[in-house]
Image 1 (cartoon, rainbow, N blue to C red):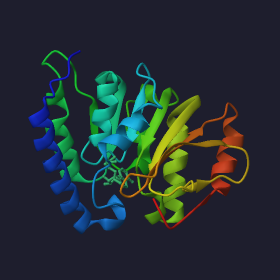
Image 2: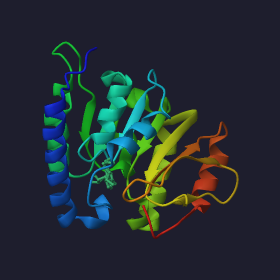
Image 3: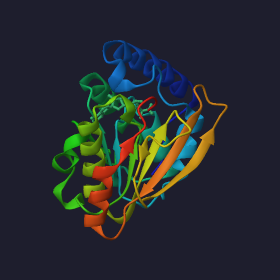
Image 4: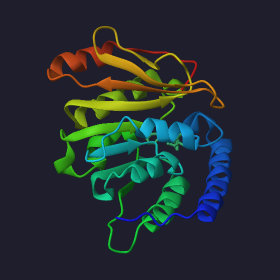
Length: 224
Ligand SMILES: C[S@@+](CC[C@H](N)C(=O)[O-])C[C@H]1O[C@@H](n2cnc3c(N)ncnc32)[C@H](O)[C@@H]1O
């Protein structure tokens, strides 16, 4: 699999990403959370916490900058599903992601939909088998019920031992589990504007305990 991604293409694409993202942020600031896509540096660092051979679902893919970092890391497009709520952003993903590869390489699954209903969006056979959910959804701006629904949906499609890799712009975890879910801040990029962080949350083997803990979790509200 070869990436068809030269430098000038890269710069043109970034300009288009920035302008579309900002336009959509004006329309839906709470949904997008920040006014620009993730920096390439933060996206690359987040991608280091994902194994290339894994089955991955990305929720809140935006313009696909993080998606591109995952693909550049070597994740196979057939093992990647990207979910995006905004129809203009989804159209942009459908236009720009397949062209990264030669015509023989299949595209990632690109799905317009609400991550709250994740188990109805991804291929049925993926449910319970996903290794990693990558998320940059601005959880802080969502109502508590919706936050919990998204987190529960993510844990539902993960395999036991699978993990959520969540990008946020607060040094505090946006999800404070009440008990013992294994959560770790794995990236702290203070020089990013704004400072960017990556947290991982690991799914336990005992699913009932997991659901109880998610329902009791508190989400810090001020940052995504
Ligand atoms: C902070 S942006 C991140 C975009 C991209 N991953 C990046 O880092 O540049 C959050 C994205 O999540 C999407 N989003 C918000 N709520 C969502 C939901 N319930 N389901 C799917 N996507 C959602 C927004 O439309 C937006 O594109």
